[in-house]
Length: 138
Image (cartoon, one colour):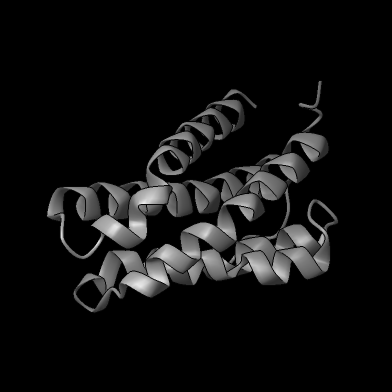
């Protein structure tokens, strides 16, 4: 359970950093390689952290093991840790993580800046579901 708490804390740290710099995305992403590198690094850490957290919860609850990163979220939906519709939608974070890890030459500013604006609240929702399911609320 302590590893789950620690992972939630790290994800929250990454969220705070991304939120602190996200408003500069459209202005700096294409022209500032240090900004771009930092942002992509923290987005990778955030998405990877969510996957690892999902896997930790699966292991803690003794659920079936996923065959892919995305399936981790499906399993959490099936077991009612996450709302099933949310789990299906949030599973795309696994693809985003893989994109950041492997296709970094193809990264498009609009995709990244749009992902930031549109998905950070989903990470908050994911963490709320995990806290509730693990009895870490309050």
